[in-house]
Length: 116
Image (cartoon, rainbow, N blue to C red; front, side, top):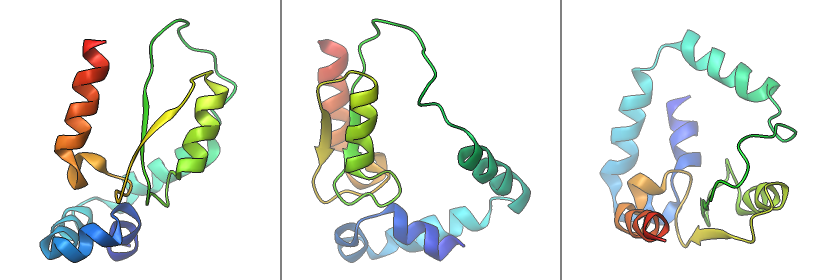
């Protein structure tokens, strides 16, 4: 499943401009044991946290990739609405893993958020 997962995690832009990216992450995913991955998928598929009420009055920033097909910008906007957050920050030309595809932009957003 490594090929399918990695192609969903990263934008086509990143895969084209950084050919070693896909190969590296496919190799990393092939090291994950099937049982643990199955448990994670089962948990994610069977868990609905939308009705959970956590800590109130905690400043939160949602960040998503424009090209994320796993956690789409639309899904993140819905989550923002459920959490009563005015908006999300969307990184252009980025997929599911902005820390890999756009680390500087993500770090800048996080620094600004923490500073505020």
